[in-house]
Length: 203
Image (cartoon, rainbow, N blue to C red; front, side, top):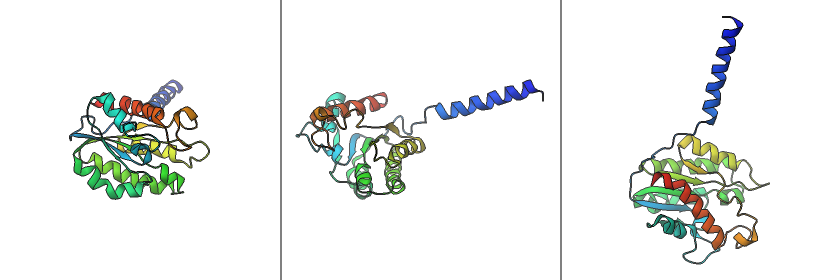
């Protein structure tokens, strides 16, 4: 093979590699089964820092014009959530499950590998029921410890929809936060909009 042929082959290989790296991952359960939209997570789902009706699941229900179940519990780690997955999600005929988990693992010093193993178990169990999963990731400056990339890897490997940083532009802004960790009503409204944009193509 001449130099020209080698160059062409090299360009083809490079193009295939670039396509593999940049193409969108295949989303599992694009046409979800089940009946209910369930928000499953920690205090970001429960709505800590806002009054009743101002949490993001309530705001999301308004945007979607259909009921949304709030299965959030403040303080939950991924291990805690895994323990209540069956009763609070799988037994409720999930159609779409929106997840905010991992923040307490990060805060409590849980190894990223452990947290993501728990989260993967949660995600795959939900997907096995035919439901679409949307993950609200986190990217905490200076304290990330590899979590932000781990969310990306998990979403790619499981075929989940990912919002890379659900608190982007909210965290650290007084007008959007009720305390150093939790949003206020305005902050949760933004989170609801982000989840709405993520699920809208699959409704």
